[in-house]
Amino acid sequence: MITLPPQFVRTTVAREGDTGAAWLAGLPATVAELLERWECVPEGEVLHGGVGLVVPVRRAAGGAPGVIKVSFPHPGNVHEPDAFTVWGGHGAVLLHERDDARYAMLLERAGASSLAEVADGDEVAEVAGLLSHRLAVPAPPGLPLLRDRAAGWEARLLKDAAEVPHALPGHTLDAALATVREAARYRPATMVHGDLHPRNILRAGREPWLAVDPKGLAGDPAYDGGTLLKTRTPVLLSSADPLKDAHRTLAVFAEAAGLDRDRVTRWAQLLLVEALFWGRRHGFRRARGGPERDRLAGFAQWLAERLVARTGSTCPPR
Image (cartoon, rainbow, N blue to C red; front, side):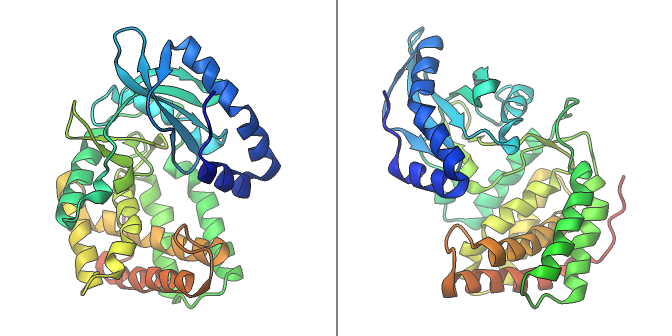
């Protein structure tokens, strides 16, 4: 049987408690069953992401390389295979097999390096934008809609603003709330990756770059541009002119994706406000507490305030 990576075990138990520990206890047997059923043999080091175990494999029939991914059972992971099915390998890895009851998939194996390793910020934004454009196809019925999350999103922002210590100006929060009310309802029937950041874009052979780890949402593709900028904040922190570089990232992404730049900027502003509140409550992946957490939260607030001037306050749904 496979050996689970210690870091994956620690983070899963820390996040999920006893439920996570019980899931981990049965995970090696689950992988063994999937290997037998899908006629695969393990090949190489067992990997992991935030919530999923990734086992490199080779298929017995034909010897094609792949990966078996098993994710922790969570509502946010339900529609990942649906997204892969819709895309059919166009801009994303191919889905070969799925076991929805076990949150498991047999996927095409992409490369080991990701877009996060590319130093040129323009290239990062352009590649992400071009992929976003390719992935923005008509969504099938049954996927979660961004517009259906608007009411809960707004309530959570207001709750956080009331409970979490912060110095966010009222007009900056108002701009984020306006995006939830307006932009979240834009293009409801379009596929959205939902987590299109550089670590989820891998080098590949069949295509230069392929997307992995989608959430499988339907709504405004500009949302993914906001995700990109939010995850680039550690890079922007070390920039000589972070605001200029932030606007540059958004502009390059929007042009490559064929999207309105102001709408992409609005999503970025909203997600930065959300990240500020989340970081104050729970910490960030890079810093759960202390001065570094405060520095990251302060930068998220600083950038969210300055993006408001670019976007204005209205974005009528179409």
